[in-house]
Length: 161
Image (cartoon, rainbow, N blue to C red; front, side):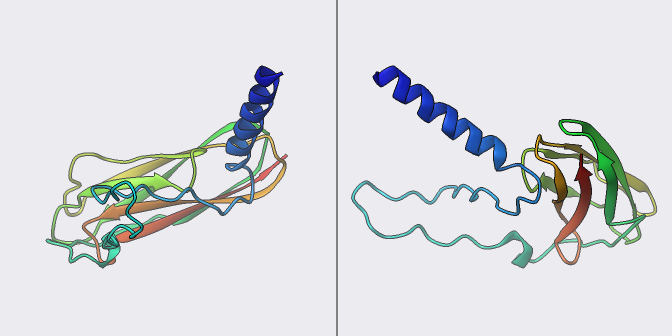
């Protein structure tokens, strides 16, 4: 009996985690707090961390994008869809991308790990894996780099059939 209850609970939790990446889902898992732990029994909250977008950027540069939003149109359930966002470093300093993160696990960006020199172009490849829920969806990719502003947001859309 206990095994059945545990199994049902695990299946329910798994279903929730899979559906959290479903279409139209705007919710994101809370970010982990690093190096700010609370001792057992301590009722105080961890110190708030500074938003990386608020930090001063050293040697900032500027970018121009071919486009910052892409609509895949109609895609099949559980399909994998790729798009390359192209940018050009239009500033006078090398571009250094610190990170690129999708708004959920179904949106995975790949970005240049080496500096992109002034005048050169680069690409951000975004792979979107459609879920099993039909409907319109919108996902974001947030890029943290030595640009002003520090973060840039790219958007993808799809109509899952």
